Image 1 (tube, rainbow, N blue to C red):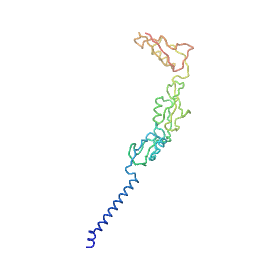
Image 2 (image 1 turned 120 degrees about the vertical axis):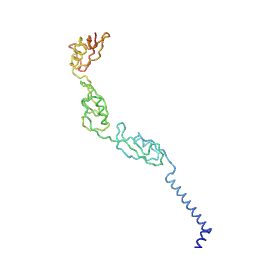
Image 3 (image 1 turned 30 degrees about the vertical axis):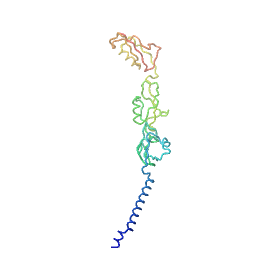
Image 4 (image 1 turned 180 degrees about the vertical axis):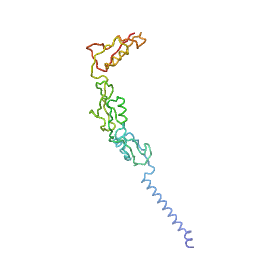
Length: 254
């Protein structure tokens, strides 16, 4: 015991202790420097904003940068977004991360899902547009054909070909609508309206499936209901025909 106490108080022991402590500090210093170099300690880069870009865009955008990109989700479909558009990213844009960090992205579907075409025949143009929008479809061209049903859907086209309700097409597709022009092909003689009141003239026009056009009253007309037609355009005649759905302009006097 006396020998151990004497050794612990000797210069040799203190010398060896100092050497051991020095070696520990040197080892810790070397380890810290190695870890710093291995993990790029203190070196950060700013995450770029990838939202709105397509996969083809980011190949050039990230050229020469140390980021890696992986697709986390590709099941979303957005009507006004091109296929393969980035809509979310993690980490967020402008975040500070270490070089080599992986950016996980969410992109829109490259192949849109299918949807069954709703029945639009006989509905109005405005209704058809609303229905197509609710199904994730768009209105394409509006094509008018002679028919008394003005702005009513007569038929539907997809890529120039007729299509029926219930057929499956890609979501986001444009559907062309064939609409009635409100006139039709049937011609009728121009009826005589001169001498009639407004109510009488409208009754005659309805019977001929014609419409009132401009209704012009003289300045001295105080009561339009009792006013009488003194002129019409086009004028009546056995040889004068118009298509059903067209309009007749009427001029009234007191």
